[in-house]
Amino acid sequence: MYNILLIGNGAREHVIAETVKRSRHEINLFSCMKSNNPGIASLSEKVMLGSYSNLEDICGFAKENNIDFAIIGPEDPLNNGVVDALLKEHIPSVGPTKSCARLETSKMFTRDLLDKYNIPGNARFRVFSALDGIPEFIAELDGIVLKPDGLTGGKGVMVQGDHFRTREEAMDKCCDILEEHESVIVEEKFDGEEFSLQCLCDGTTVVATPPVQDHKRRFVEDKGPNTGGMGSYSMEDHLLPFMTEKDVVAGLEITQKVADAIRKETGEEYKGIMYGGFIITKDGVKLLEYNARFGDPEAMNTLPLLKTDFVDVCRAIIEGKLSGLTIECEKKATVCKYIVPKGYGLPKDHPDAKSTSARIAVDSVEDVNLYYSSVDKRDDGLYMTTSRAIGVVGIADNLEDAEKKAEQAIASIQGPVDHRPDIGTKKLIKKRIEHMEKIRG
Image (tube, rainbow, N blue to C red; front, side, top):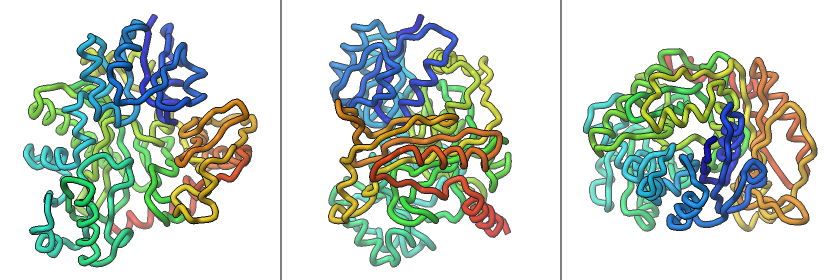
């Protein structure tokens, strides 16, 4: 019998809860959420609703329910030091300490770490706390990327050609960032195709799960503002159509070196998920950024395929025994498409903006997985909030069938909703392949 605490209330945590409950072990799941996710609540023995910054209440809930270990879903509680607080109560976690979580919470920490330990894949970059020196540095770059140092919910990165055009506009963006953040990271812009590689880490051993490609842009054909992720796909061969096995190996090798560097730098072992956002360029695999937890939506592509008992995986991470456990995933293709309010990503004065608080109805669906994200269950039904609502995941022997399953199921969700119908389609995949062929020459 294991008493397990899950912290988080999104679709990522919904799929984590489902994967925990598939265990061969007898499980009592307890959940700490800042809002009531009906999917997670239905799988939990008991739920605590409250802020992720209230560490005293979280630890009290954990002790009251004799928690054996915790699984931390989102980045906010990691940044708040929930793992450290639980450790003081002798409760281990699948999730890094606050110091190790700087891998995500401070982009400056990660870039400096790669630089200090000569880890391949780093971008050319500099960190600025004032405007002095920025014009000279950006004049040296062919393309510019700007990042605030800190958590931005996956929406803070600004890329030349997408968010601004000229170097003068880049300076204006730097001014805006420095008004809200202590520093801005200025990096070279890479040209290539991105992939997510979610790795399990016990402090020493790093194991990769199948690569996934996320789609940040709000609208079809990768247009519109950046979002937390409109959907993602993975392939039955555990590659992506534009990548080779060498690309996966390169991403894993970088992550292994980063895990070793964190141990040297902090004196602590990183225990949890090291999710690298990588890009394949003409010069090989480069690092865009790291996240210190499973991806959202990427967790919905990988965890349903996991054949190895997830509770055993969690114990191996905590106990430093990943090297003795074989991690297996089904050879299936997956397509995740997010249902969002029509007003998601649109200006507040747009006619569709009011859809963010509308009620939706979900008819019974078969042969797909539904994961609730930012929804509010009330007495009279299910309501959306301002963010992503439901992840719809199709799983099949090939990508075409997985995409069809997801798309057909979306028709069963009624209300002022929207999604990206092009995710996982032949047309978009062909565009990715042609782009990568051009880059590789």
